[in-house]
Image (cartoon, rainbow, N blue to C red; front, side, top):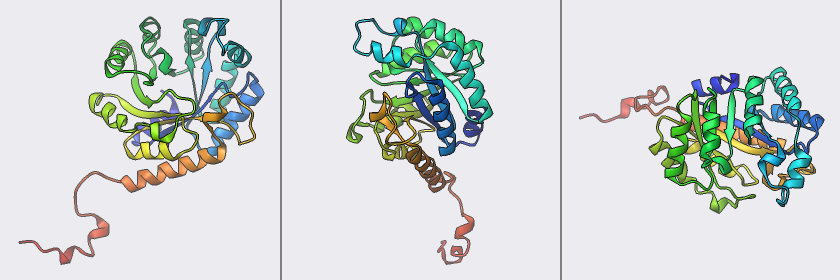
Length: 276
């Protein structure tokens, strides 16, 4: 199990993912710079996208050229995985086809992220389910029934399933975040960890999500505002990520313990309590 993930979950702390995705523009040197930036910002993990463009979209798709330009060869992911290990930041990716999943498994990637676009792709989910992985499933565009079907497929061999509330709009307005869904997912899937994949271009929604009990936060990531990348409209900068990490720690401290008792800080006023 990924080192930082295990540490955060054991301590009931929030696991923060810098979604690099394809913001490296197909340049492995830039990908390494993004990993360095995410580490400086305090993120626990970096996430990429692994795919063969022709298996992901048709050649006449409006995003074919973009995806092709940003497609990294499989060997680069092995390099980036090892680079992330040296930087002490978890590395994982979203596979979009069987071959990509097989390769990520071969190089020892322990977390598979499943995009909202594949949350109802039962054939692909069954292919992924044979791997004993931590599965992080985004639930954008999905009904409760579809989420239940997906988790039932994945849970056979999974080490852990994390469900991320997600609104698949790029970017997504704050008022369309529907964070109450986090409470619904926690209620109907008590055996699973629940989090947020956020497509707003600020940190406010993600901070609120942590107060609602989201234990995994995923944010698209770029180095700075002048950074030229595909997902710029939904990405936050290193400076924003650093602030998000700080604000979530602050939320965790404020939430504190849920045990009702006399607390040490109250002992000096306890003598005034009227007990009859």
